[in-house]
Image (cartoon, rainbow, N blue to C red; front, side, top):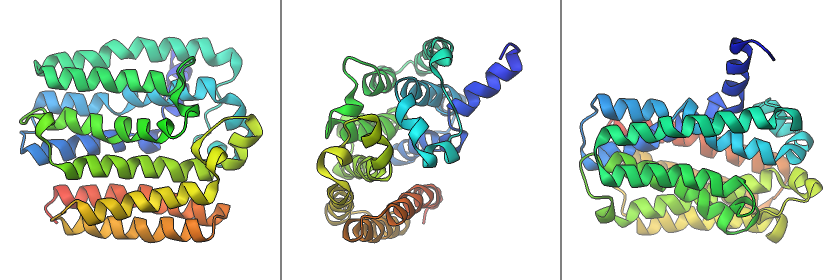
Length: 278
């Protein structure tokens, strides 16, 4: 892998293009909630939340998860990135190299709350995957870290553009709990590979059924206590409740994987419809 083009393509593969829309969508939800303007700075931050931020999060994860990734047919099929031990130094350098770029986007906002949320997002990605902290193997901190990193912090980044993140309604924190639940059921989907590799996750510690039940409880709590006015959000929560409940009742790989697909695809649809006013 000597050419710049092949190196860039490899890093794009590592960054999981399929999940690039997630963080910008969450950021956009924060903008929408605070009724902030979609200006050039906000657009720049949303772009930085695609390849650069996902390279940091996914790249660091792949560096230290080679054994479980190698054993997981699901991960190979979806991600297809193979960060071998020989490639680890290159990927680590790339991850560290784009961190200042993500920080620069926060500096452009001239907003302290935005800067703190952005720095915390990068720090969370490091703490989640890299030893000695490696929150990924400290359940339930593994799931809670995902609730922060994949929802609450990018939401705060967007919300800070026209509001005070410390005054956000409770429903956004409940949605962050839902994202923690999403991670919980994802650990159930990766149960076999993680167990074979000796990784300690929420599912390998407490079992697949418990992980799916925890996800279901998170969606039920959010739906019950969140007081959501958006029909798209309410429909999404109900759909996720049904999917995770089915996985808890029948904790088989196919059922769990189907629930994960429903949750991921449903989020994209629900977020777009919510921003559009449905």
